[in-house]
Length: 405
Image: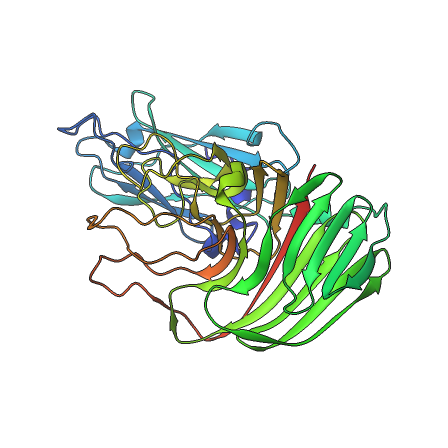
């Protein structure tokens, strides 16, 4: 019998049906292949449909899916300031393996049962010898990480202006903004100075500051900027509890390379990153280990240009489904919350692949330290058009920053 608790996972959050596609965390190996040492996509592929149904594709040559082992877990993920395991298992169990002959597709049906405490559902498939073929992970509910920004305020944020620089101080935190363009000039917490600057600015498009206003608001203080052009507004809030909110609105139309906003940060200062989102590889790259929703981390290392000889996931690039990200730097730690699920977070400027790489896109990347992007170009060959042509309209973003520990 299928454990009915698992089905809680299926219908809890309709947004999960479309916002994040689950991928296996590792590649699979076909024991019946003529090339058993070559890493290939999992011979069992699982796709989430609707109403508690999974589509299971069997790409084995000789093995029925019924001979494989299907197990499930309900998982919770940590907040960025927790340093425990990448996830906590709430419940787990084994499924009845579906009968699906080699080369065919079948369905795995699960009956929905209410459950409200799990962040994600994971399905793991092992071959008849017990070797893992892949693990797929789907989100079950919207993250409540934003609640970190609503913690009590222990300080009163105080705004001031001197020589065209707006300064807001809240306890040990000081944030500075340009009165000329409304962009962040930097932040300091105690003796730590952070070089995240020059944003939010548009990845593509222009803007001219029309008006800017700052004031206090209870224990917080804000900077509100309005623009003419593609960027419409930026609203900064420095909270008395030490968080900095950045809400922005822009418009995009026509064909562009990217759509979103950027900040500068020196690559030479980046040391390590840890994030909750799709990983471990960036979006749009060859993913030898696959990609799945989870907590991932790696050190900053010289670019390996996406080659097959890489032994570690790339540090730089575009990461999808990011809920939170912590960037450890030589200056200290920067924590970022992606409040309204901007689809892609860019970390530093990825290097272009080698000349004439077969099957890899050659789209240029925005020059930045951090980017929050609503669209990337579709992968294409060197002779194909790689620009993005998305729906015209208004886009909004909401990200929070915490500088230091």
